[in-house]
View 1 (cartoon, rainbow, N blue to C red):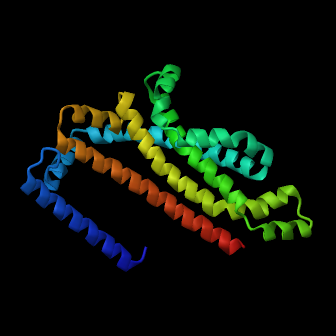
View 2 (view 1 turned 45 degrees about the vertical axis):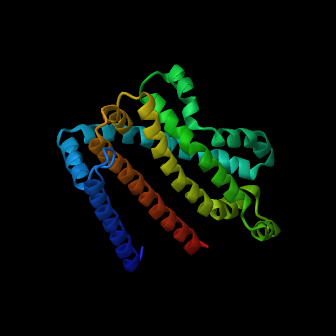
View 3 (view 1 turned 90 degrees about the horizontal axis):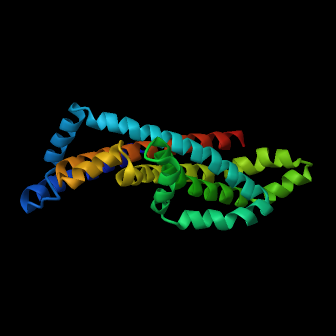
Length: 250
């Protein structure tokens, strides 16, 4: 990010926080406490060990579910992009599950795995998996046909065509799918924990939401947003470096 762009972003965030503080102090809505009160609540939750303990539990589920979704999603997406028969068989299922709300699977997952980490990992997996599959498949399909024809004209085997042409050409969309997947994974993590988990940030949100403690609810939401932004930043940084590396190799 350019220095000027970063400065503008920080300024916009500061203006938003000032507006939040003023609105909380003048409007007196129970669901909109001043930002300073939310910060105090966040400090109290961190000092008591609740935030860090529940955050660690959430991040473990997120990491396991996202890594599994990335590996399985890229594998299936590559197969669907490279083999038309695999695409014809799997595409209806992929798009059906992609469009379906993931929370409808919670009762099924609960029946299979019970209340525990396995269910949370499965929800994160389902939230991230299908967007990764679709983007990876689209990346393979959108490779320039002239590059494929040129590789075949020079006698490239199917394996060489895949590794030297299709896979590098699919990386931009594949990396975009991984970046989108981490955001969906965070959303799935929180949604699943709010419904049925006994641990994690979602369970903490449910606890204080049921007590109408808006300062603590918003404090936890800020932590969730921070986690999502950090994950997205890491994914975007990796995307830029990998794509730049493939461009240099080309």
